Image (cartoon, rainbow, N blue to C red; front, top):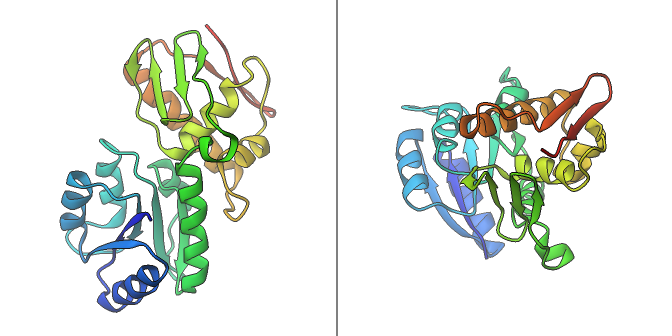
Length: 229
C-alpha cells in the first residue's frame, strides 16, 4: 500500500486523517510545519503528499516550490474555504489537485486514489507500453521517464500525461478539453487556464535543457500540438 505524508499545523486534523488513512491501509508520515516536512520529503519521498497551504515557518506554496526543484511527488493541497487562493498559481507551481476543508475523509480519499492512479502511469491500466521516441524526445510511460537529447527532464504526473497525449500523435492538434481528459481523473475539475499553466511549465523545463526548444506549438483559439523535429 502507498505511503502518504500529511503536512498540516493543525494536530487534530492530522490525527483524524492519520487514523482514517491507516484504517484504509495506507502507511502514514505526519509533519506539523513546512520546514521539517520539506527536509523529510526530500530525504525520504512518500508516494503522495497532502499539504496544507497555511503553516508556520514555511507555507505550503513555498514547500511545493522548493520540492519541485528536485522531486515530482504527487501533491494535493488542502485549503480553507475562506482562503482566497488562486488555484491556477498552485497548479502552476506543480500541485496535482486541490481539496477545500473542511471536507469529508471519504472525499479526500477518493481524490488521493485518483491522483495515485495517474501517478502510477498507464502501464497498470493498459499493459506495458514501448517508449515513445519523437525526434529528440523519449517518453517511457512504464517508468515515468522523460529525456530530451539524452538529458533527463523531470516532469510531474500531470505534465507527463499532457506531453504524452501530444507526443502520441505529432502534428495533430489537441484542444484543452482533450488534454484535460488525458491528464486528469474525471473526479478532478480544472479550467482552461490550468492546462495553459502546465504547458508553460513544460516549455520552461525543456528550455532549461535546450534553449531552442519549440516542439510544443500553440494554435490560438484551438489548442496545442507536438511538432516532431
